[in-house]
Amino acid sequence: MATEKQLDVDPYAAMENLREALGGVGIVFPSLRVDPASPELKLIELGRVRADAADRLASALRRGGCE
Image (cartoon, rainbow, N blue to C red; front, side):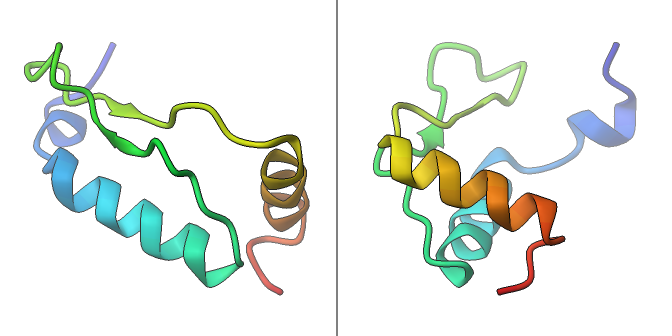
């Protein structure tokens, strides 16, 4: 269950933070957006990504996000 602190995060700011962090390691999620169908849940939709982007994301996470 989500805590109050988790629900206080602005989904648009979170999405932009994620977009910037991904871009910093050369990864683009073209469909990244705030899910308009569930504003109360503040969901971020990652969308579809190419296999190479998913592979690069997995590698970046394994390295701790460092290039």
